[in-house]
Length: 250
Image 1 (cartoon, one colour):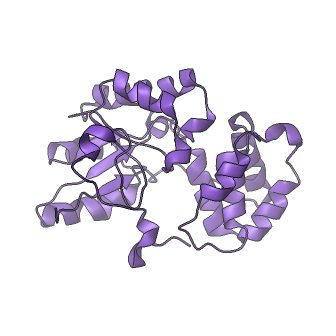
Image 2 (cartoon, one colour; image 1 turned 90 degrees about the horizontal axis):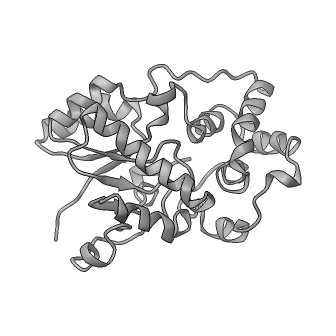
């Protein structure tokens, strides 16, 4: 009790430039969960393209514009009600931002998402740049050598409960394979993309167990208890940073 575990998702460059030096200065360590597509394919994740668009343009304008491109066959309606009730509940965003994010991250079939994002970017004359967005491979290796824990955050950062068991298995196995080959995988730890019990399912947990993952982290607003180590080792609770004064997104 009384101890804090610091975790950081998505391998953004600012984690290396600001977080990592601060941890070293204080004699601390943290866990950094890495989505591996940017390293394997040299491209921005769709989830980060969405963040960049929301940071650059009015959320309501984005939502109104993408609505022009949406057709009924693009929507996966099986879990729309659940996703609407359980996503972005801790965030206080500008008008249209939640709707735009929810549509692209949860409602749209992933086979359409990238092309839709690129159409919106083209309409708003916005160019995405991969350079200097993520932690570089050499920097991940340096962080690992200085007691930082590098873990898996899948390959492409999908909502795992939206995709098949086979697709989930590829996301998990391939991400660990890359981290292992890079030489930064000291222990197999994992963090569920997006987080929340709606974001994964039994198949996800079974794959983590089969792959001998030590622990996996969820988003759940409570502290880890001793019982969690045995009963919830593949969805350990952690707080959403938006619940804290200086961690809020807008």
